[in-house]
Length: 76
Image 1 (cartoon, one colour):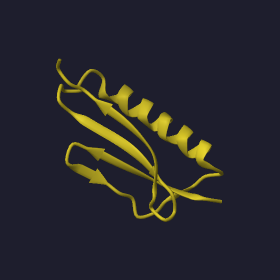
Image 2 (tube, one colour):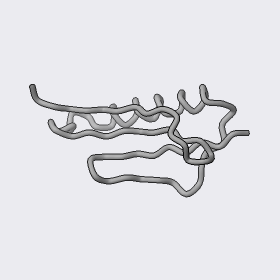
Image 3 (cartoon, helix red, strand yellow):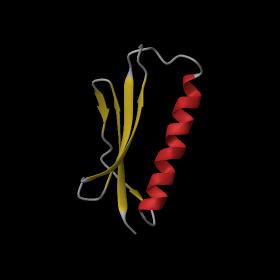
């Protein structure tokens, strides 16, 4: 089964796990990333500050970036 890594970046902080997650395919990895994003946004509970940015990047076993979800808050 393929191994995927989920890299989380919040402004200048980066969390890179040493161990990947085995999932059947890219679709399952994407579903996991979107589910995690939804949970993170829900847990913010109104505390997202203007001017912040964070992302979840899916990487394959060779650590090649495959897809990224970004959440950006900014003032216009």
